[in-house]
Image 1: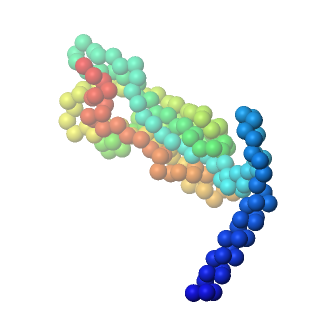
Image 2: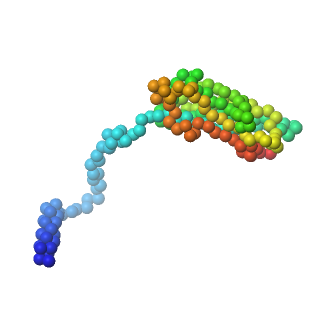
Image 3: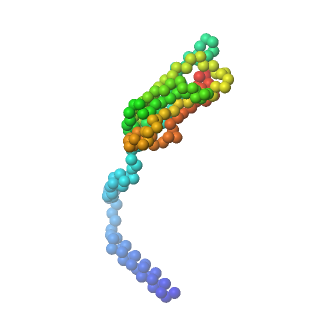
Length: 182
């Protein structure tokens, strides 16, 4: 017990001596003195991931017209957007954006595209004529990117999409009907 008491007393005395060495009269002048800021630029640079392209597909409808017979005409618009941080650099014939009917995977349109900067998009449009909301066995539309088979092994990392999970989009018949309204 004596040993513990001595240790506590010595620790307390040392703390008071150190605090007293830095203590002095404190005068509040109302001025704010900024503390020095350490640069974190190098730390941020080390933590940053390399810039990589990420191609994301979307599918929508525009220019809807209801015909006198009750059918609809509209544009089916497929887009690919580079949502990544790096440029997508490639030859125009190495990938394309396809638009399909879900039933039978019937190809409606295939359009090649090339380089895409971050935030840049490529669009292709297919006019759909005489669409009937009540079409039996119709399951909707789909758009997807098709890549050349060797694109991953061509030693060009600038044309390697970093997220293949967003390379397609679809619209069900119910979604199409809701978008058409009426």
